[in-house]
Length: 322
Image 1 (cartoon, rainbow, N blue to C red):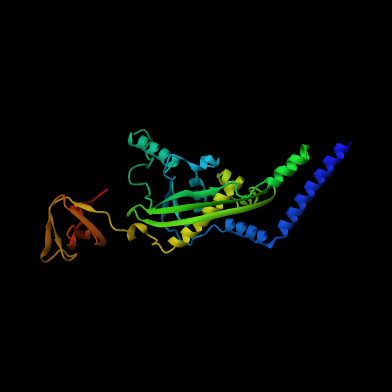
Image 2 (image 1 turned 180 degrees about the vertical axis):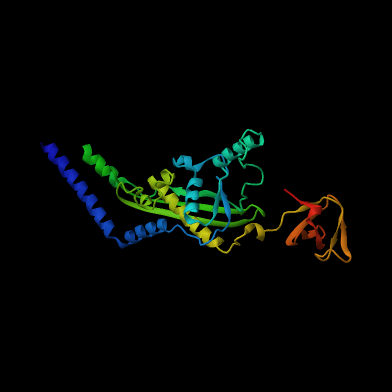
């Protein structure tokens, strides 16, 4: 009986310490502000009034996939959710969906599909940009759960498991998003994001993520694990910065970029005006490389040669390189 009362007293003392600690923390204005900042951050997926272009999201390079170590799906899935919900880009599939589409195209090219399938060359939309998400660092064990371990050791049975589920931890993560222009290969944006979370409560993991509609978005552990939420907030921070940074990009990335080169197909001449009259600037031989400037009048295009000479020729006399 004496042992029973001693263990009961220890349990009461441990529970009292936990309740007091939790009450003090809840009353701490700094913790309250931090929690509100986290919730606002998750709710603030940026929205765009216009599309910034088409984009594909691909996995970072390397044989070591850091997300598998955290038992998380590929970060590309999380970024695609942000892209879709923000409406800032037209998302293109360059993964499993693309592979399946190419199989359908192979069937069409082999004559296996029914007539009127309308599947063929020249239909795939081009990506203006490629985005690569990566992890800079993560600290999954900052802080500690010593109080939780102490309580579960002192209290046995169901009560011990309940107290042991109280999670008091601090976790941080730093990530980076890189966006490359597919036409020029320029890195047009690189933003870093930071995420952290102080969890105090019973089973708090995943609560507000679910309230934001991300729980059912197919992102698995990013919504229902603590470290996943921390990494999610870091990526959201980086994505918000990226959208702001790219807000000044042209609406038509294709037209704004340098034109693809062309190859002269038949012998022709370059003229100084679109009327193709007067003295020729120079003669052009088959196989020579020319660079359209983007200006054109009907079938007559303005081009430059490799020596910087500028003039006009018929687009029927050269082929764009592919």
